[in-house]
Amino acid sequence: DGEGFADLTYALLREMRAIHEDTPVVTIVHDCQLVLSMQRDQMSCYDMPVDVICTPGRTLRVLSAHPRPSGIYWGKLSPQRLLAHAQLWSLREECEARSGEALPMGPPEIP
Image 1 (cartoon, helix red, strand yellow):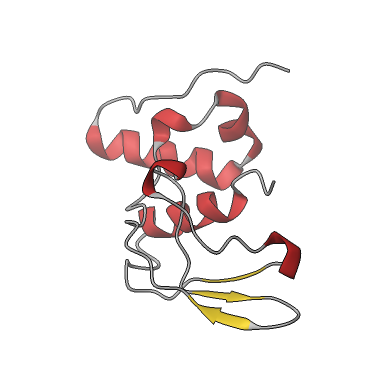
Image 2 (spheres, helix red, strand yellow):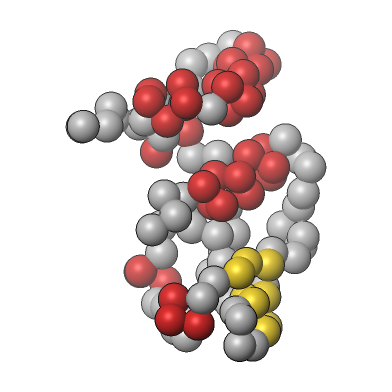
């Protein structure tokens, strides 16, 4: 489990408008990690579908109907996760300052 770092990085870049929905997304995995099919109900709102998967044995183009996240789902991020990423915390503060409202925050993680 990658703990969602790629998903969060994608969302952060979208939130910063550094990439857009049409930006190609490529990932690398081992052949044994390859999942050839996923149903929409198996993916969360913040899961990022990819366009190309590279393994040591092959390269696959992916046709996906799953929507890509348009930004960060602040209500899904725990306080611990936010505090562990200075850039994420800073962006959150900028968004709150622009809107004049507090953004939602996810529940604390249980150790």
